[in-house]
Amino acid sequence: MPDYKLVIEGGRELRGETFVSGGKNTSLAVVPATLLAEGPCLIENLPDIEDIRVLMQILRHLGAGVTWQAQQNQMQVDPCQVSGDTVPFRLSQRMRASYYLMGALLGRYGYARVGYPGGCNLGSRPIDQHLKGFRALGASIREEAGMIVLEGKLKGANINFDMVTVGGTINVMLAACRAEGDSVLTNCAREPHIVDTANFLNRIGAHIRGAGTDTIRIRGVNKLRGASYTVIPDQIETGTLMIAAAATRGQVTLRGCIPTHMEALTAKLLEMGVLVTSQDDIINVQLRQGHRAIRLSTQEYPGFPTDLQQPMSALLTRAVGTSEVIENIFDARFKHLDEMRKMGAKSVINGKIAYIEGVPELHGAPVYAPDLRGGAALVIAGLMANGITEIYRADTIARGYEHLESKLNALGALIRREKISNGNGNADGF
Ligand code: EPU
Image 1 (cartoon, rainbow, N blue to C red):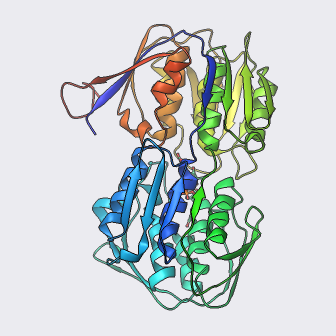
Image 2: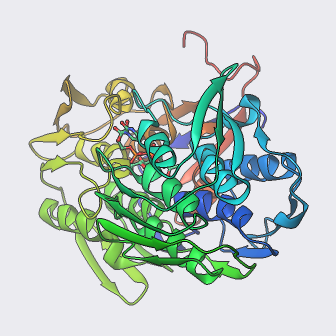
Image 3: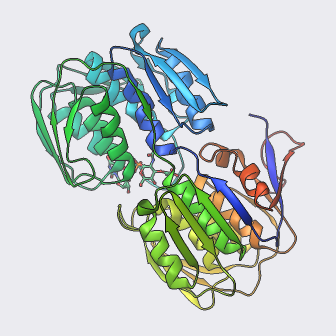
């Protein structure tokens, strides 16, 4: 991907309609899950994002037959041709979700060698709960030259997670659905993409009950078949666009979303004075005047998602009053606030609490995207700001949002990509 920055001419209202793309985090679980099948799978509504392209490279590296039609947002995976069992570090470190190759390969072949995952730097992100689950299912786990080697014939087990983990719940579910016998997973995460991944696995013949509650029961089966499946819309993209609409005091209609997944955000927007209405798969967002400060605390689903904390805190920089934002899931997810200070935002960070004092206006400035959702937050800040905002390291945003600039531009934003001349992705001084 060439190095580029996003240049935003701020101060324009967003108006009109747009569609929400397929879910990033659900796609990044469902696509590796196809390796558990013994026939080709067609996955539809996948977002055309960088993380999906990296995943495709990983599947091809393993020998799977992969056809990716970006225009149609669909991928055909033929797992019958898989000949490898190793995901090298150069590929695994390019994304967080590479950890799902552990559960999928271990479940299918009883052996996997996978490099440590990468992804956004949000503080410490251990995978001990994934490994604990695999061990409980009977896998032996060792490290060889920085690679995690997992091996063993899996047997059903009862596993209680020490904390609620999205990745851990999905990964152990992947491995357990081809284990011999029954597994009961407790203290599970309940995010919509856990339900979606379980629905896909059940479609290909798995026997999983309870996904979406804190207890998931899995009856192991010895064969899974190929099938086609359409992933759910992206909860976080929906939320990001809702917040962007409010931030520009615009009026936007989002189509193809699931309003019930958005209840925590909707409640907070209403509390701030934003008008949000929904019907079927449509959400309308409108803000006419100023909005109020709030208190916000991130939680596992159905609480307020950590992934929307960053876009939401961009909106809070211009609220009337001082907001308190508590980040309970990750210990380093406030870096975007440091960048927004360059744009005139006022905030103080004390451990896991950020106090954001609303200001009447932001001004454009050169900033850099510290991570995916932090980058989206800066886009929102840039839309609100007077003047020009330049976002460096903007490729991190394309890892997880499908065509974000074009969608926003179609709603009236003015955002363009500009190549960075020094070619190293950094502005002078960063
Ligand atoms: N944790 C552990 N041990 C584990 C697993 C997690 O201590 O074995 C801790 C983490 O350090 C964190 C908390 O538990 O403090 C929750 O982590 P979780 O496992 O739920 O997160 P994740 O699987 O690493 C996924 C998403 C994130 C999203 C979180 C929380 C993917 C690929 N990533 O990460 O998405 O923020 O769940 O909902 O699904 C993003 O899309 O921008 C993103 C970061």
